[in-house]
Length: 204
Image 1 (cartoon, rainbow, N blue to C red):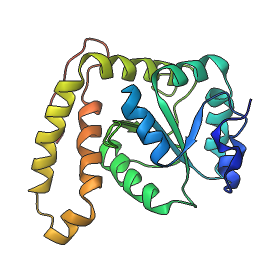
Image 2 (image 1 turned 90 degrees about the vertical axis):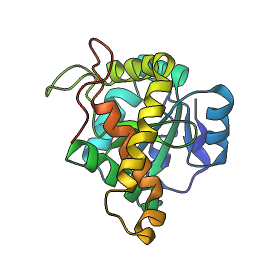
Image 3 (image 1 turned 120 degrees about the horizontal axis):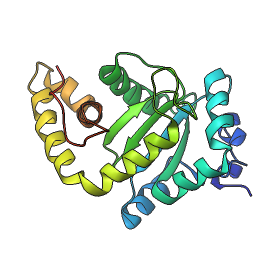
């Protein structure tokens, strides 16, 4: 059954129009639904010629069990980096600052207000490459959203202020304010102890 990407012009988005994932294009509709349903957003950014984008799509986005988890706990947004280089730049800078590397597909979890709190690139369907499976990531993020959200947001705000005072000019601060918020929340999620709960050492 087609999702909301069927009427888009982007070849990349159209490649995902038949996924069982209830994809939204980037826009007000997805944001408003996330706010109304109090769900985090899963943002996936890629492009039509990206090999690993196709791999993750086949392994996870075409998988009924994975799609069911995504649809239950998240509002899911697909973005073509060639159509929205502005969004790609903002979120890629955040992912690189957090993980030390970037690439596509980019996988970012956001609050309904658009502040990322976890991110990465390709996630495998099962544990490998010293990485959790995508389903494990989805379920853990959903759990933390329910159980530890207030602590995450408080810590995110504190770190945002620290980053704002770390040497950026006023012009840069204004231009990249959203990027700073991205880095803040995602750094916090990286330090989260998935096994035992709670926050580890503050990121350097």
